[in-house]
Structures are given as structure tokens and as C-alpha cells.
Image (tube, rainbow, N blue to C red; front, side, top):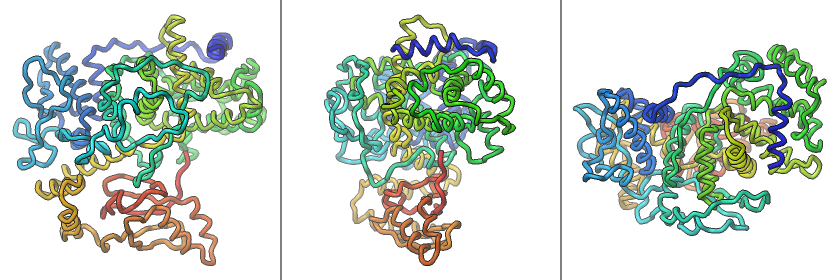
Amino acid sequence: MEDFWREIESIKENSLGVQEEQTPAEAKPLDEGELEAEWLQDVGLSTLISGDEEEGGKALLSTLTRTQAAAVKKRYNTYTQTMRKKNKQSIRDVRDIFGVSESPPGDTCDNHPSQLDDTQEEKELPGVIKTSGSLSILETIPDVPAHSNGSADPGQSVQNAVTDDEYLERDIPLQAEELSFEVSYSEMVTEAPKRNKLKKSDFKKEDYVLPKFIVQKTRFGLTEAGDLSAEDMKKIRHLSLIELTAFFDAFRIQLKRNKTEKVKGRDSGIFGVPLTVLLENDRRKDAGVKVPLVLQKFFQKVEESGLESEGIFRLSGCTAKVKQYREELDAKFNADKFKWEKMCHREAAVMLKAFFRELPTSLFPVEYIPAFITLMERGPHIKVQFQALHLMIMALPEANRDTAQALMTFFNKVIANESKNRMSIWNISTIMAPNLFFSRSKHSDCEELLLANTAAHIIRLMLKYQEMLWKVPSFLIAQVRRMNEATMLLKKQLPSVKKLLRRKTIERGVISPKTSKVLQKSPSTRRMSDVPEGVIRIHAPLLSKVSMAIQLNSQTKAKDILAKFQYENSHGSSEGIKIQNQRLYEIGGNIGQHCLDPEAYILDVYHVNPQAEWVIKPQPSV
């Protein structure tokens, strides 16, 4: 860890003196109940605390897997018990929310996380239970094996997807290993009964300890985090935090919510300003910007002349020049008056590190580091660590997630020139650890080394698996779709109980294929659409061929539709060139906006939702 300690000394010795020592805001210690209340608010379940009847909270609860439901119940029980000790009134019992039957003395929801009441199919809307004469909170999924996050798959258990020895206790393979995004990570771990036999994981400098992963190809395709609408990504973040908590619960590790010391960010300038404030200022110049413009300038400056400079992120640069440039950036950047040509790549690299170090809150949630330390001590297989990190990335705020993705892309460009700049994946991770996972709390040298070692390992995982970490797991997308459907049903109170149950039965494949075919083609389902069965109309407002009706079959992919438009627009026109940067979007229906993977099969994935629109338009960049 020589690079790490050298970076710590550099930070101390080169404190630039421009910004006064930031004093952490005084935070009143929170008790366990208040911490769980904040967790419930962070995952979008504040209605459990307030008691309000809101469709969003009900819909979210209706999509939870068994392990996710157990995690929510555990936090809600802790909250209610703490509030009762404080003599708070009007606290609902968890059984009123999830429909849990009376347990024998000594039994708790932790011992039996999946014991839920049967769905009251004939009395209310599916997934809804009644409490005190009014609709309460949606019941969780039935007690069946989960596949694609909750949809039943008769005859197939989660153990078929992954076995004990293959998943947790196998030595790190030399060949590529396949990852599945179809099944909830916490469900996978729960189905591996030998997890208590895990050996301690050692951190090694050699790159071979990080195996190569390949994401399992499915008919659903892969979805980037930026391919979904902002509203749907907000739901993904809520579900990811619940899933991350359930994942750690499966290892009997507490994902502690202890608050870290925070400082009040500045309202103007560049350094010490929250990412959201910087982006708000930048969007006055460019409405589509996702990464702070000043950070993009730092990347550009290093890429221009510093990628081949030896030890680019080890060097401290000229302190006097760095101090001068900082002051000028704070005063002139937003007015576009700063002269970038006079800055060299060394000063840009120093200020890039200072930019992240001086953020009011760490780019990544440093409060989760203790849980990751425990997980890495118990879990020898990198796949387990990858899954926990994947969920943490999905749970990040949008500004943090987009910025982190751009940062890892930039660092991989630096690492690609390792033969000349001597900056390997190990060097970058250890140098950036104190800048990206900083903590203002006091630690002993031993504790600080352990935190740094874990933080550096996390950064190394992000750099190694960057292409996969920003792909949204398919099981989370399936939950969002179901959540949106439940929200629409609760708002409109449309279909009868039998019709909805029949639809859910079809989706789960419980009934015979013959009956399923008849029901899918019933007149009531086709009345919702104005187009013939299996036909969708594609809109392409920026192309010369602006609209086209396309007949689908079971093998139609998104790329086939794009190719058809390319062919139609290429006859005697230059429009055919523009189609290369276009993507097919699903807009509306049971998801807000979704940029399709070109390899996705349209008919099987989306069942041609008649409420959705299909549009070809440019794909935004991060």
C-alpha cells in the first residue's frame, strides 16, 4: 500500500490553504429506530411510517421477493419496537402490512422470512389486503421459488441456476465465468446453504485474482442505467437498496446506516460544491449534460498530453500554480473566462483528485465500507463481491452514478497506457482510494489501512468490470414493470379480480399452452389496441421515413427494425448514415422510457404493450 500512504502524505503536505478547514455539521446521534425510519424513506416506503395511503408504496411492496420482503419487515419491526418504547402511538403492526399470520411463541420474522399469508384472491384486488375496513399495503409475493424476480417458474428452483459449490466455495476460475442478471442476487445467496463455511479472502496485487465474467445472454437483452427514464431509475434505486440490504442480511451482515460526518457544501465556485449544484449550473449552458463540465475539462486536459506521462497521478504538480488555478476556476469557470491552454496535465490531475476529495459528501457511500469489509473477509468468490458492488452502483443517486461511470471510463484510458505511464489498475485504485472513499472520522492507522485496502479493492472491481456494473439487472427491470402495472391498477381500479388473476396465471405459465393461447387472443385484450395483433407502428421524426407499421414475429429484434428503417431511408438519401446513431425506444405503457438493446427480442420481452409508443431517436451519451 505504498501508493496509498504516499497519497495520504501528499494530501496533508499540499493542503492548498485556499479553502478553510471544513467543519462537519453537528449531527445529533440517531437511535436505531430513527436510522430504520431513514432507511424506509430512502427506499420509497415512507408511507409505512406516515400511514398515508399511496399507490407508489403499495406497488413497491407488491413486487418484493421473499428475501426483500424479509429485509423490509425486519427494518419495520425494529422501527415499531423502538417507537413503542418511546410511547409513540398509532404504530401499525407488521402483520397488518404484510398479512403475516400469528406465529408460535419464540418465532420471529427473521427465523421465518417467507411465511406470508396466502393471497386473498377472491376478496380484493390481487396483492391487496384490507386493514380496518380500508385498502392497506400490497401483500408480498406468494411463497414460491423466485425466477426473474418473483415470477413463478414451476418445476424450477433457484438452485438450478446456481449450486453451492459453483457459486460460493469454488476456487477462482481461470476461464471466463457466466453471470446471470435474471434472478435476484439475494435469492441466489439464500439458496446456497453452505455460506457459513466461507474462507477469508486475501487481497492480492496480481490481476489474475479478478476472473473474467460474461453476462448471460437472454432474449431480454441488456439495459444500460441511462436507457431508462429518470422516474423508472428512481424506482430502480429504491429496489436496489432493498435488494442490497437483503443481500447482506443473507450473509448475516448488518448494512449499518450510521451517519457519516457531513459538511455544508458551497453554493458557488467549483471545489467543495455538491454535484447536483454543479450540474444545475452546467445545464443552463447544456441541458443534456450528465457529468460536471469542469470534470470533463480535467479529463480532456489529461488525455491531451498526460496519458503517456510517467506517474501522472503520483505527481503533486507545482503547488503555487495549482493554488492559482483553483482560485481562477472558482471565480471564472462558470463565466467561461478561464484559459485552459495555460494549464498542464499535471496540475489537471492534481485538481481532479482534489475535486472529489473536497465534495461535501463522498462520491461513494463510505458508510457501507464496514459491511463490504466483512463480506470480503467471508466471501472468497469475486462474484459475491461483484453482486454487492453492482447493487451499490444501482442505488447511487443519478449524479453520483453518471459521474462515477465517466471517471472509471477515464481511468481505464489511463491504464491502457500503463507501459508508458506506469499506472496499473493497482496503482490507480490505491492512489484514488483516499480521494473517492474519504472519511472525516478519526481512525487508527490499522483501521485506516483496512478501510483503504477495501476501498482500493472496490475501485479495482469497478475498473475491471465497468462494462457490466452499469447494466441494470433484468430482475430489477421486471420489478419496475410490475410496479408500474400495479400503480395503474390501483389508480384506475379497472379489471375485475378474475381477469387480473387469469392474466397473472398466463404470465407465470401455470395453465396449459392451449388455454393460454385462447386467453391471449381474447377480444377483451385486443380492444385496447387500434393496430392488428403482432403489429407495432414505429415513429422516426428525425428521418425521412417518419413512420412505419411493422409485423412482429417471435424472432424480431430491435436491430431488425433499425435495419429496416436504414434500408428505407438509404435510397438516394444521406439519411441512411444518421440511422447508425439511432436507437429504438419504448415510451409509455408499463415503463416510462426504455432504450432497447439491439439484441432484444421485441415480442417476447414486451408482449407488444398497446399503451406503449415505439420511437427511433438518437441515443444520449453519458
